[in-house]
Length: 135
Image (tube, rainbow, N blue to C red; front, top):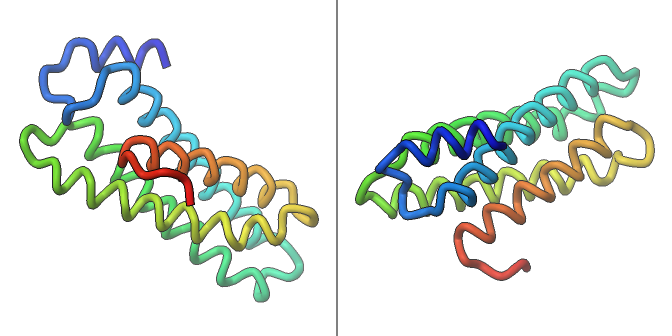
């Protein structure tokens, strides 16, 4: 996170977020993108992969949305707070949906447990940035 924060300290466009908050968010998003991608790959290798198809799909959606959210936050949006807010809402939904199914499989598959933990943290981060209390 130190390197990420140092990078944001050099930027003027940060979308209204403090450098430390922004660096933490970007790092959480990167971790989420990696975890859900690895989980989807892990589920594909399971003997019950066909039953896991909905979870795989949600993980892949979440990976894409987390990656886009990370890039939008990294660029800084200047005055377009609406785009950042909407992207964070989309990321929150993607993380919650991925978490929902992977959490069901967490007792059977270690990659689902890790994914569920990571998507929960990412959803919490999105809520903090949106100023929305956890629901």
